Image (cartoon, rainbow, N blue to C red; front, side, top):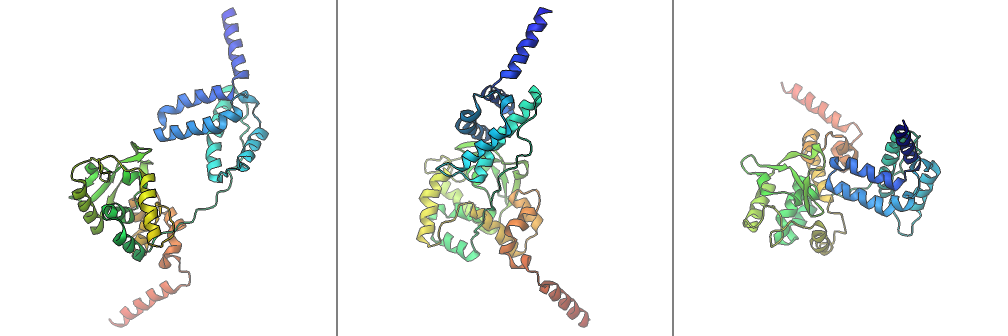
Length: 321
């Protein structure tokens, strides 16, 4: 009986006094097996740099809604500005830890009804077809295949940098997205929907053949350094992408705009939105119309002229019978 009393007392004491730091460690260790390595590193950075310094010493059940809101306000007022999007990412594990702690130690989570900060939609700046062709004509020849594939497949940076020759299906002209390269390490695809097959256009097929000759069997990776190691996307951005845009007087655009460019070119060409979504690894066509439709006049026209043209063609065909 005394043993049960002591065990219950110790458990109650732990429940009352467990600190945020202690429980964050428990929470991380329990959930670690289901997270990708890159996500684990992101969480560790957020915990170490933001959450533990602020809440680590506090008993988890004593953290209040006011503490949370004050912490978030402090993040918005830092000398080195943090974006609302980044602050929301900092707050997400805080919400998860407090929610789990509340369930486990039977207190009401103070994070209830705290809405995320509003994040302005990031504008996209895709290249026109003429700009793409000009870029490919003037880029360094050894990087022309790399950017041809980027512009005409819509692959994410981590996907193209992690692409290996074993995922190139020459016979069926398919690129299989199975791996990525994140922080210099092989990783799985971003989401289940990102695991897909991309159809090669003639331009992409030829570019990969050229890259095969450049690679000359020195690496399992399709695009690699002179010594066969995977590309470092930051290095490529700073040494190749930025100087090229400057030399061509394009003004700076993020490398990710190559993905946006592929989507807008496919839409402008009249490809089926469902096919485009599959090529890009999207589960639905929602993003296509929300993000890219304004770049394609035929999708954004609202004056009824497209339907009028359809009626006229139908009438002309009827009159010719």
